[in-house]
Length: 116
Image (cartoon, rainbow, N blue to C red; front, side, top):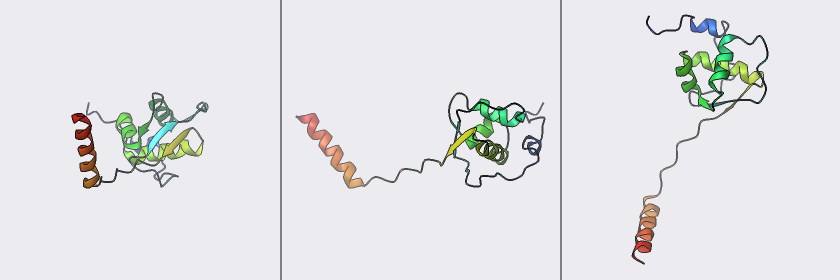
């Protein structure tokens, strides 16, 4: 066994190649909504919802967990977002660099407190 899924990725999305939500990025954070999953939900969409039962995951983390390409998870997440079963938020932007002068002043202040 090679460890690859038995079902091709395009079948997991119902043959859909593009997400209905083009803004979903690899690091977008997915969270399960409060609504219960309706009967008849495709297996791959249900698997994504179940993966989110324990908390939030990024698109790329969900793809790794489900062993699907990121593009397929983006399609699945878009479909679930359209149904209101999932919430997504943009990735957290990287922090800006701190001003080195500010860091030096903080360190000097901490040293001063230590000597008091």
